[in-house]
Image 1 (spheres, rainbow, N blue to C red):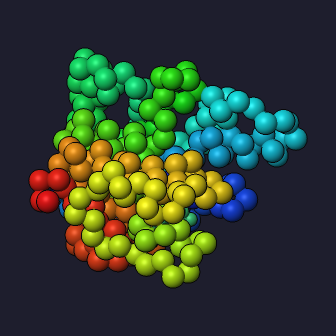
Image 2: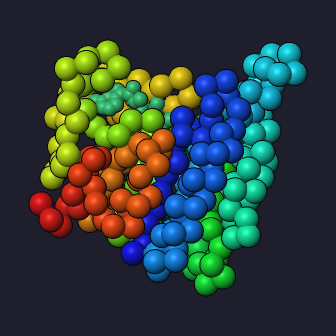
Length: 255
Ligand code: ADP
C-alpha cells in the first residue's frame, strides 16, 4: 500500500516549542513497521518554522520572517528524524509549486521517491519554504501532502494532527461536539460547517486545511484518514487498516 503520511507540528513539538524525541522515535518505529509490511511511505513533515521560532526566542532575537525561520528550523528537524529512524536512512525532498504544476518536475519527483523506496529509505517531504516566494507557495503541508498523494497515485493520505478526527464543531470550544467516523463525500457546504477552523498554538492549517486536503485527495480517488499523532496505537491500527477510532474520508470512487 502506498501512503503519504503528514505529521503535524503539534505532533512533534512540545508545548515549549522543542522537539519531542520520544514521539519521533514512536513515529519512526511505526513507519518502519509499515515498510516491513511492504508499504511505500512518504512522510510530509511539519515543524521547521516552529523550531526556527523556538531557536530565535532562545537567542533573544526578534521575530524573523518565515523563510528565515524555515531555513533555520529545517536542519534540526531533519537531524531529529534521522536520529529517530536510525539505522534506517531518511532523505529530504523539498517541494515547490512547480513540482505539482509542471509535468517534468512531477516526473523528477516521482523518480526520486522511487529511488529512495528501492533503497528502503524514508522520504521526508516539506515545502521549500525558504525559497518559495509569496504567491508561489503551495501554502500548507496538509495541501502539499494531498497534492503529493495525487501525484504519486497513493492509496491513502494520512493526516496526523493533535486531534483524533473531524468533529461536528470545534471540540476545544464546544464540549458537545462529536467525532465523525466516516465522511463519504466532502461537499462545499462542509467548509465552514465544522467550526471556524483556526489552527492550534503550533498548527498552521487548522481543521479547514485538513478538510481541503481530504477533498483534494478524494477528487484524486484517494481516501484520507485524520488521526491523532499522539495516539501510540495509530501505527498498529494503520498496519491492521482499522480506522474506527479516527475520521475516514472515503475515496470518491467509493461514493
Ligand atoms: P496540526 O498542527 O496538526 O496541523 P492544527 O492545529 O492546524 O493541527 O489543527 C487541528 C486543530 O483544529 C484541533 O486541535 C482543534 O482544536 C481545531 N479544530 C477546529 N475545529 C475542529 C473540528 N470541527 N474538528 C476537529 N478539530 C477542530
